[in-house]
Image (cartoon, rainbow, N blue to C red; front, side, top):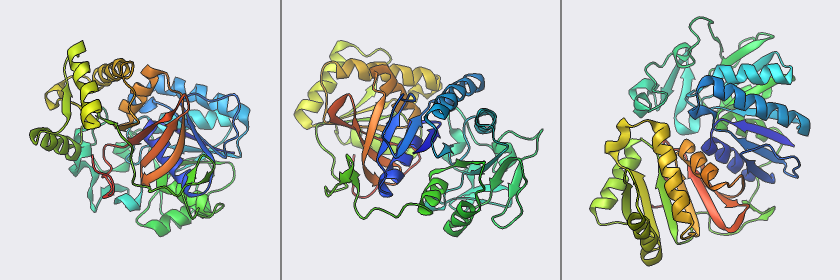
Length: 377
């Protein structure tokens, strides 16, 4: 069994999609299970949205529990643009696993995310010139890897794909293209913790597992249309990225089934959402842009409680959630702990069956990822 510890739910789902692509029976849990028959076990944490001390506590609990399952190897899924408490969490994993070195490869060239000469680029431009500069919890003000990882007092070890690696410590590998990812995957040494974005994990799987010819559904090949989403559909957006917010605003102005979350959703507002699901087979819930002066955690918690109240009235066939911390908060409020990935609709967009409600599917997507042409919300 391969085990992955992800610092948010969308990252966990993306890893689950890669597992399907490689033919692995995959499970995603928010708590480490006592038993599993999974070939790929993904633990979705919520550490990125927590203070550092709480993130370390969560990673300590998860890593200790995973050790008892004795996986063949463990991968640490971090944010591809290094938001969160990356170094503190990696040091926690190393201490518990008894390892002295970690290889961190956060870049993902398929999404235009590269690292060159110690700086991070998005589609060829320094990362701090993008929408990541206004992230509500981890705004990126510099493209320098040292600044992004907050390691000025302890200089980070940066290496190019063919440079010699130190025997201990955390190394950040530079990546400019897919060939660099494959080089790093083949250079990973035994007793070194592999960490980084989905691209590096995929490159590691390429060494041992061929790409499945068809998607895997419940352990068997799935021949369904990979762009097919059922109805009624509840779409929930908790992202601050302009592309998504602008799309939702345009739909609302065109008379679409969009409702912004009020400060105190009452029964009438919930009835309205339930009616949209029944009459139009779709409802879109989003956070009003005027609300972004409130704390991100308060907004997530309010949205999660509201969705919980709504689902006590009506259960749609499909739920799509944009934003990893939002998705985790919603699942935690409802009490859904296990998701079974069944379709990778596109990179980072993975359709999962809820173990406790077998007829319900949840799809999650990072807010910064684009929607594929086959999916229209």
